[in-house]
Image 1 (cartoon, rainbow, N blue to C red):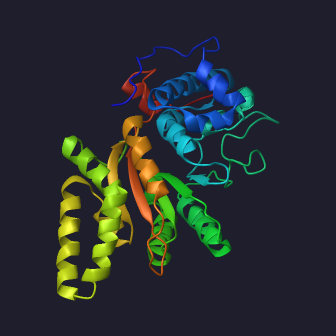
Image 2: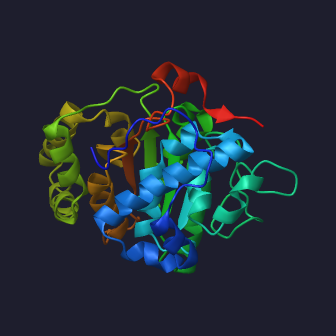
Image 3: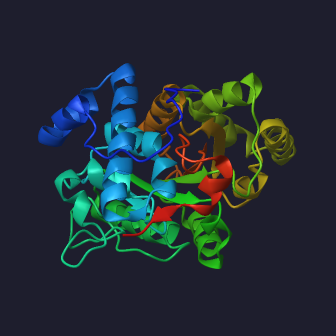
Length: 321
């Protein structure tokens, strides 16, 4: 596990001390230069500020707490807003808003004339898709990726979808379509342990790092070009790879839909998230007729760290004022 925060029993009543977040807020480009220990500190400060601001304004906090490290990692790696992040549903985007020049207005969230509780394009150039409904992120991100491809723009596009929203029909339709047209798209499945079981242990983490490495991807694609000419050898190699992956990751469905599945990773461990996501987003499409698509599964716990008991966390994902 990455940076481990203590349990907190109540919402803060005074603004927390956030020196690193203050610096990032005033010089946003500084975020991309931070080291791993600084990213962990930043995630802690974002989390504490999120809890303070929600205690003052009301709004969602459970979903946002579950993606603090993921949000920090994505904005650290990507050149946003030029690169695109599409959040499914959008109620988990409070950390995203805090890191994208809206921290001073967080006390106005969900109030008349204030910030929206969801991504809103007219509110910020960092909000790439106006959302509030589930299961729409993959199709929206795919459209952005295909548009960039048509215009010859070197742009990274990421969709972040939860394990609840991934079950929606629109999400599966988009997955099937993306597997066919194969846009240069990264889809992050944020499994907050509310529905999908996960694999743990050193073997799963080890294979996840291997599958995300440029060396493995290059070897995989090079072998494909050679072995596809010998159908029997290709079928055997593909089946062997799928069986190896199925031992440590439930990704067979996504592989069959045309995605290369990598994971699972601990969504609160920046030492895993940053290098793996960087490797995935830095990959260029192989020299084939179609761009390369990737899918990543991230495990997070909604509401971490626990301000409330686990049973209270399950019930209390938002506050109202």
